[in-house]
Length: 191
Ligand SMILES: NC(=O)c1ccc[n+]([C@@H]2O[C@H](COP(=O)([O-])OP(=O)(O)OC[C@H]3O[C@@H](n4cnc5c(N)ncnc54)[C@H](OP(=O)(O)O)[C@@H]3O)[C@@H](O)[C@H]2O)c1
Image (tube, rainbow, N blue to C red; front, side, top):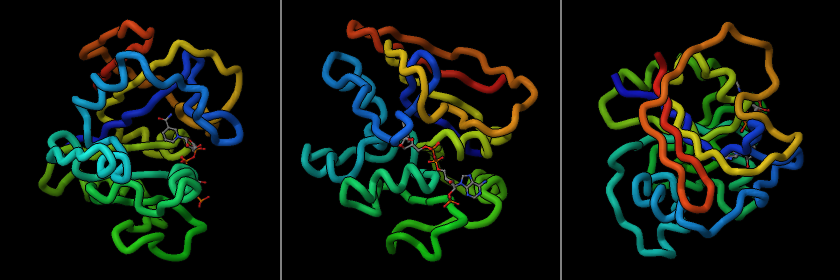
């Protein structure tokens, strides 16, 4: 059975974006970016991969799931197919059709879709975000790969949305690394 991994960047206080959806408060540069990207090149948008001449195989993830608001972010930057090197799904009740020929719309029961995908052959499934979708998919999240930035934002889009509370779910740290620029990369597995 393949795994669903929520691989995401967060502030210390658990926000993945500002209220307006912007993410430019995450500092770029430093040593964390190249190191993490080298490990997970699949998570680099296709446009950037193409610009950098990246042609690495999809070794960790071959499928990506996005909430509609995360997908909107890509649309605003000029593409409705941000990760065309992966099999892409967008979860939404308001989109009426696939947003791009290679992006499949999931309009009902994303948990059932995840269970179906997990039973298929392949490598991992990347839950790209955002927090609202992560909240709904929590029962099926097997791993959390957290890029924790040394920033406090105070408010914004939460790592697991603002939905109803859940019973505590235990995860344990599988590996951790703190980079020279202060970003911590923490890998958690569901206990
Ligand atoms: N820091 C990071 O690494 C990172 C990663 C990803 C995204 N982001 C940022 O996070 C923000 C978006 O996150 P978000 O939490 O606000 O929203 P989101 O989870 O990306 O999208 C929420 C939308 O997904 C759909 N959805 C979620 N659960 C659903 C369900 N159970 N059934 C059907 N549809 C469902 C709904 O779309 P409809 O309203 O169409 O029904 C909902 O409004 C963006 O600003 C993005 O840039 C940051």
